[in-house]
Amino acid sequence: MARHRETRQMPGNLNNDVYTKRRRIAELAARSPEMGFTSLNHLIDLAWLEEAYRRTRKSGAPGVDGQTAREYEENLRENLENLLDRAKSGTYRAPPVLRKHIPKGSGSETRPIGIPTFEDKILQRAVLMLLEPIYEQDFYEGSYGFRPDRSPHDALNALWKETMRISGGWILEVDLRKFFDTLDHTHLRDFVQRRIRDGVVRRLIGKWLKAGVMEDGNVSYPESGSPQGGCISPILANIYLHYVLDTWFETEVKPRLPGGATLIRFADDFVIVFTNREAALRVMELLPKRCAEFGLTVHPDKTRLIDFRHPSNSGRKRDGKPDPDTFDLLGFTHYWGKSRKGAWIVKRRTMSKRFTRAVRSIYQWCRDHRHLPVRVQWDKLCQKVRGHYAYYGVTGNGRMLDRFLCVVERAWRKWLDRRNRERRLTWDQFNRLKKRYPLPLPKIIPPGQHAGIMVSMNRMDVSNVGTFAAPERKENGHDRVSFRHFVTLALSHSAGRLFATRAPIHNIHFRSGPIRWEDQL
Image (cartoon, rainbow, N blue to C red; front, side, top):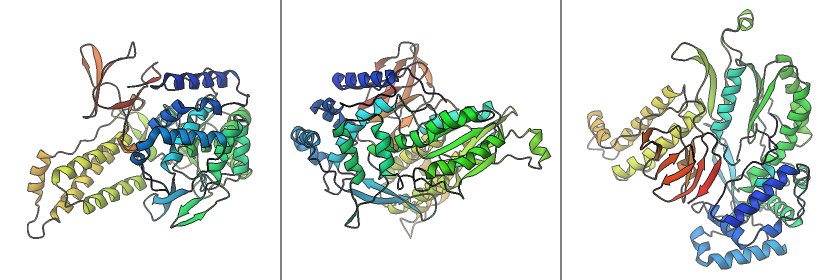
């Protein structure tokens, strides 16, 4: 996929000065794709840091210093002025990140997460606000991870459209082993220097790369990698893979391939769709060598070429393989299935590992919180269920959503029953309870409609940020979209105007049709 050379508009915000600076950076980066920015740090002023503070999530866990967002904002202006002075003078020292481990998959494997201090999060956000408008002009369309106005559903929908267009084809499923832990700092600095030549900004990035990792009270200093958890890590990872993978594939590999090929990447998770098997085998041979040049390792057991051709393809039947293979990406298993009208389409269902992990999480929560009041349990379970539907509610996945709801109900009833050993909770009693406290029913969002309107609330967890489909109903001639009890919006798609709002909204991303802007309320 070729890059767009038109300026990609950056989201607006309350601070017009910050918005203007970011827009000018984006325009300059689009006009001069090979130019290195030598003077950027002067754009970071107190207003810039205030905007970075506003965009920083306040409910996150504290870092190694134990300071919370509430404690930091007690002397906010003084703290930001001090932070600005240290960042500009070079005296700022990046503190170690606090390492925590979260479950990965359904097994015992965990994923290490680094938690920066709150002040470090603000400064990382400020630098990210500088880098984002530049690299948004450089990144290819096939890159979807951790970018403004892009989500996993956008990547999934692009993959769905491409596989349907070519009737399946050949899918190269690639896994990079411990990508975030093996980023080579030397190569990353070289990549960053191609666009960022401001010494202050580069030194800050270098300090974050060299920042130690605290685990069990001990601090270590890895010579490679970028800890997951800070907001600067995703864009550094995207920059690394932009030069190692995306640019190499689009400029050197793709033009030489017989037939078409499309790369779809979300962070370090990516697949390549081919129309020609020989081309796929050639790239499969070259890719490990390319990654090895930059310190990355392609997992040999998790990287495979999948025959995903249309089920009616006569060649498959001659090969004795009537049923296409399946592949996984971003929590979904992709497979061929029949629509209600009997046509073959690419469908998606929840990966078994993701489903198992979600079920275990529900069971554990019900067990740990079984003594809470029923209404409190119900409210929290509704949030968890809606969050699951928001991500996995795609066409073809209705059976898995129904199954998930059934499991949640069984887990809830089981641990409510365990509250009292003498008085059992029968199914009849539980069914009466469900009428009073009903759990949300599954909702399917058709392909291509997940990218409707994204609403981000203040002091909300990532799981509470949702994407919405087409408007549910008409009201007074205008579309009306509701986000539970948090927000009610009345929108005019033609003019892109906001008519009415209710609740503490922070970011409204208009992503329907030609409307591509964000307003801060």
